[in-house]
Length: 152
Image: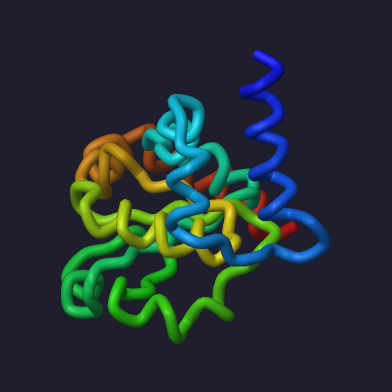
């Protein structure tokens, strides 16, 4: 247990010491464990709570055309291929949650953000699950909370 805590604190120290710092892929892999495997993912209900509370930003990393056809109004669109040149649009003090319809591109984006010092997770049940979840009363309740928290 002490060893796991030490590794977690070491990684946290690397990422959050003063300013967020880039880490190499080799370094990331050398500290990868079951806890990190769990930490890298988030499910729709948990994501929605964090977005409602203003603690997280949902980044839809699909191409612009995909986003134009359908999207979540509370998501920021930064296509995966534009992510490197648009990093400055993402806050470093919030959790960044990457999303696509399933999770393949979202996972790539999460890895890129993590290696660049961001606190990031990928939406492991994808945007299709969000669309399915946010129907009827769920949509109404989420939107009311989201608007209340973003107008503060």
